Amino acid sequence: MADNAAYAYLLAEPTAALIAELAGDYSHVLAVASTTGKNVLPRISTLPWASRVPSSTWPA
Image 1 (cartoon, helix red, strand yellow):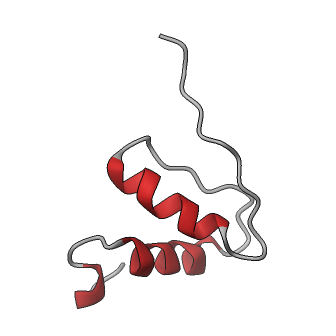
Image 2 (cartoon, rainbow, N blue to C red):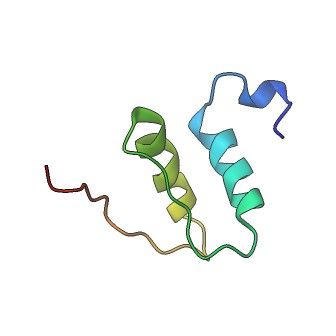
């Protein structure tokens, strides 16, 4: 799906741009609370159509 050298190291900016492009008409974009998810989602939330919801975790 993303066969491009820009995505080889999962850098936040190109990955966020790809996710934003693929999100299309979806109403939600989710990610796990990993280093990558915490790095990419804030960049997506800065887009004009996105609203940011604070991260949350399930009770232990």
